[in-house]
Image (cartoon, rainbow, N blue to C red; front, side):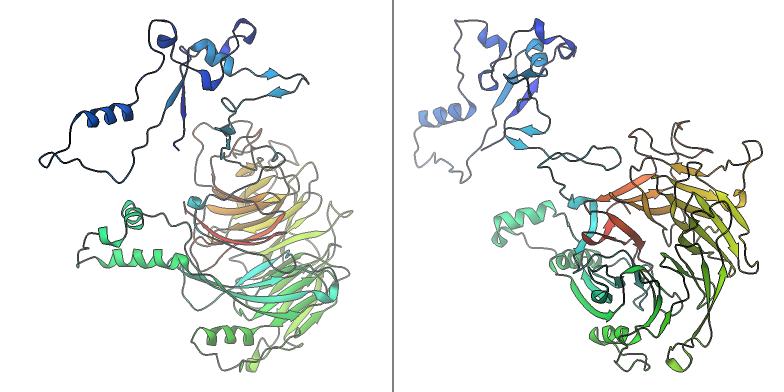
Length: 579
């Protein structure tokens, strides 16, 4: 049965602003008729439809051998249109009435969320939309993704990190493969695990069929015209990509014992077999997962590197208990191999140096030397927790920290016992949860805070401006559209202006190279732009939502524009359609 469509003739739009008290009650939608028909009692009230006319014409002509009728196997369907009579009726239909209990009723004829008794799909954005009403749920739009896969683990995960492979850089051809180290947050400390997963056959999803493919599927192969034998290789490649969309992803995994819940996981860039974990038991653990990676490699038809022998250790080769309490801040240097920085909730920062890193193909408890380098200091001495740490992408001795009380500090390991720069970037004292150092433009630093503000700084001007006041800093951009605390930030590995941001409600991709046509003076400080008052920033390219309590987001370092997130409800892996 075809859908009914309704046309509203509002008489130049004036009817929408009239008061309902001066209008007659609108007729029932099923009773609406055209005003030219109802105005005259002499005219017929029912007209012959097109189908009736066609049937009458055929019956008048007798079928003979010279005049055979064509029998169409498909029945023509006609859509009937109902008209709201005039501007008064249109305006009345837009006004709400009250029932006997005083509750406002909205009929299906004018409810924007219903049509002919069916729910209407409407877009929802966590930055501008209100909370979901009871009974409402989010449904994914498959056309928004080139690829979208989800995975629900046994226990939620606060943190994960990609492990580099030897399948190539900047990969775009489907299906994709990714190796990930994830940590658990179990209900008991002895149930926690460090899991190394290989996700393969991550195929393209939401493939849109061409018109020819839809016709072939509907009519069958016997109606297919013969295809040209000289199809191009490009067409063959596209067909292959479409075919793999039906392939199911494959998950291979090995789990290792871990004492306590895992607050943070980071993989050493120069030696991808070394995985560091921050435990909520207050220890930092280093694992050697080379044997697991060799097993993955052999399962894919390759060999191992000759050092793992297909065996792997199930316990960490190094356990450090020098911190006074647990922590979340942890990062490996991308410039100097084996250099690690860890920060705890008491404000202490410890530096790690590789002693005999992997000499002879093995890692042990003498492979690293650790020193307690920095103690709490500065204006946030009363709440000194180190929330995040990032090494400089170009300087082997410089790193930055995000701290409670609204502080960001920059350290140089050649200067002991104090920070080189200490700035309070949030005057309201909101904790700075995360920060990210741009790997392609080393003077750009992004921060995310507990008040939902996401800010980009130029470290060449990361000092208070005397003209603006001693405590005032001028950021490159400030985004205030987020309603929840920022939980993670990461710059795109190959695009200097693109950054992924997550808060409790979703994951967002911004392109900071996009300029606002008409800058809003109230949108930010220092020439920045953002979305206050329910406005969407023009730099926002993509929103991925539907997960509950998103905690971390990462770009895959080798698969072009592939993003992975972890949340209370599980993992998501996707590639936006507009990237």
